[in-house]
Each structure stands twice: as structure tokens, then as C-alpha cells.
Length: 73
Image (tube, rainbow, N blue to C red; front, side, top):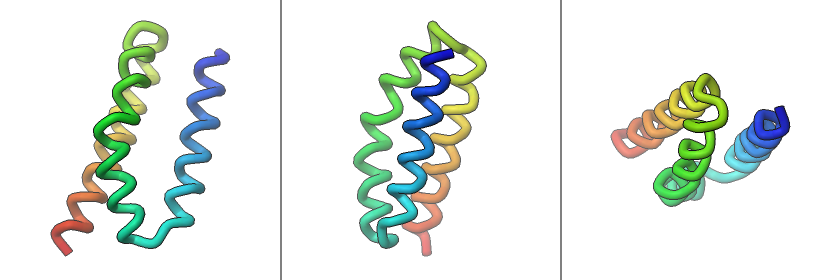
């Protein structure tokens, strides 16, 4: 349960932080963090909470789709 609460806190902070950035900074942040930020959580969740891993992967996929959409526009 503690891991779940920590992950929720991190995700809430990340969403607030991303909303505070302009689109160029947000794109750069997502491209940088997408490479390293999600990997440790995926490894931990794969062993601890597999059902949360699915949600995290969905969130990661959505953020990557947003980045791709920004690049195409």
C-alpha cells in the first residue's frame, strides 16, 4: 500500500509540474524523462504490483502519444 501511495504522489506532482511548463519545455521534459523516469517504476511494479504496472504503462503510452502529436503538429 505504501508503494501505491508513493506512486500516486509522484504522478500527481508530475502532472502539476508538467501543466506549469510551456509546450516546448514540456516536450523536452517528456522526451528526457520518458527514457529514464519510467524504467525504475516498471521494474519495481513488475514484482510488487503487476496491476499497477499496467496502469503505469498506459500512462506512459499516453504521454508518448502526446509527444508524438506535438512533434507532428
